[in-house]
Amino acid sequence: MADILDIIIVGAGPTGLACGIEAARAGMKVLIIEKGCLVNSLFTYPANMTFFTSRELLEIGDLPLPSVNVKPTRAEALEYYRRVAEYYRLPIRYQERVIQIHRTGSAATPGSNGCFEIATETGDGKKHLHVGRYAIIATGYYDLPNMLGIPGEDLPKVSHYAREGHEFFERKVAVIGGANSAAVTALDLHRHHAEVTLVYRGRELSRHIKYWIRPDIENRIKEKSIRALFESEVKEIGADYIVVQSATEGTLRLENDFVFALIGYHPDVDLLRAAGIEVNPQSLRPTLNPESLESNVPGLYVAGVVVSGIQTNEIFIENGRFHGRQIIVDIKRKN
Image (tube, rainbow, N blue to C red):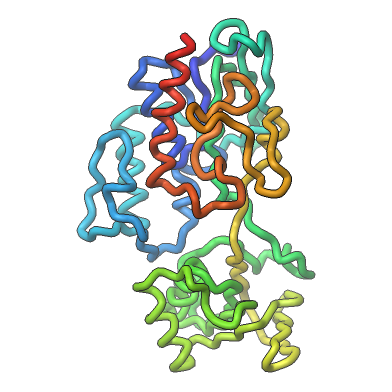
């Protein structure tokens, strides 16, 4: 039998780290399990991304985020969270996916007789079992992309996450989407001399594009250095082409080397449901106490943006970073 920990946290994003810090400060034995790398969601952001949020609102654990600008870059944020994890010596298991969360013992007294058995699997197929008196799910939403549901979407030439533009030098690349990630990716590809076509179903770019990005992408479209097809949808992806249905230009078959399908993401509610948490089928919000963030499963908490279901604009790092404090206060009250 594995050693019984006080708290197991699923997810090593900023919220998961903040939960781990609060648990460590309370003298609890904690383990964080992450299916990717540290702050994996931030790692998948466009390389040249700048946060909309000012640096102090991204800080956790009372450690300052050094940045030459008021709004930090992705690179600065990644370095900051690495330093946070090192400073607090947080025990994190990377590249380990949680496949089951099982409640054992007495559900009425999770701090004593009841425990959570958390089964995981690593990339090489090895399975592990971790046991904790309490568990926190802080998985975010960025790991599960919205799918196009079209032929060819499963080809290796399709990515639902941004990549650095260098590898696409002098290649024909389509970017599907009209919000921040699509705009930043299209600009980065253009500046690495890719031939970029932006495909978006809206009549114009999303109104949510950050104010310092909008004039850049609009000017590149205006000067035709980035081709934009509005009111358009990609209907098929082939090995060396895409088929686009455009309201203004009809059906187009375009030569293509790579596709970035950046149309949004959604939370992993399957893990919540499998653990016994009730999830609203429309909003995808988990059932929980808003004060303690404890779910309908005693001793099992939910933290970060996954709390808000599909309304991902309600919770960000700025407010999710305080969830750990709420949870640990409640756990200490029970013990």
